[in-house]
Image (cartoon, rainbow, N blue to C red; front, side):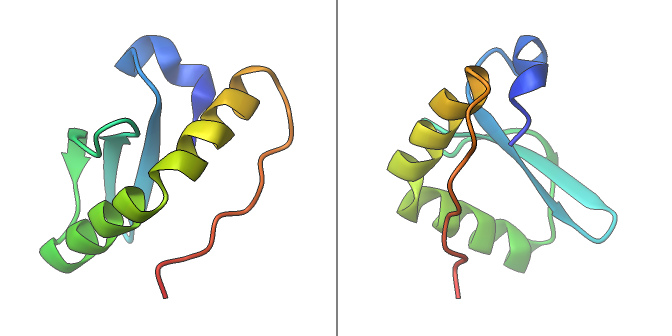
Length: 76
């Protein structure tokens, strides 16, 4: 979660990385903003975002005011 580049994407978002791939997803709707991942990792990232949307929004709100983020469980 890179809250400091809010101006670049203009909405709450997360960065998902796998090997040399990176994708940026909107938190509110899980939409791909930029980049890409291999199909399997893309599906996993989108499922994880969907399952943890409320937690991601809460973490985003903490991040923009400089508070410590809480951990979110992995998909597996």
